[in-house]
Image (cartoon, rainbow, N blue to C red):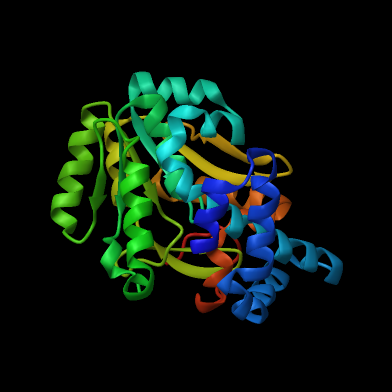
Length: 289
């Protein structure tokens, strides 16, 4: 992270992306988990050895891009977002600014960047998250985690981080925000003790559906969003889910969107770190009894 900070502040802009990728390729601490993460990619995607090598190096490079990009949050107003990130569906950002809604995203290394970008465009971004000090890495990386959260939240406008340590308070505030046509962001690609049982890539997990259920009840826009690494930087892909879906159907659509991108660009998803810790179970995207 110290090297990443130096690159962000000192490296020429034209070289920053290349150097960030090299940083991840050679210095990412995830290199120590290569065996288990590569195994998860192979089991889920049936990659050839050459495709696996390419996907794994791209994943490490994406981690390097994340490490450098977090030190650019203070400079969003000088064009960093515009120069480094392409928005695939800009009309959806305009819709969010006008109508508010729920944005469902994923652990992609760049979820804080997604929140900052949406906040900058819409002026009312609130991100539902676990408390920073609940992370196992907080004793070691706490200062960097605090910096990431603090500097990305500078661009949330009227919003901030909404922590889910008090479930009742979080549910109440989620409802209030969505009723007020604000933008709420949530990550649901995690195993949550009290979540709805579901499967993804052949593994069972319990998906948190509180924000999704509230958005469905209020009939507000629900949009899936994922930041994907590309040759020239990052692209934010967004898709609005059809109205009047059941919760099961919404969760299926949420994971289908992720699967489409994971199969094209395995580096876009951080979840290879924990996929094999979820028990193998039902066919892809089937609700469990």
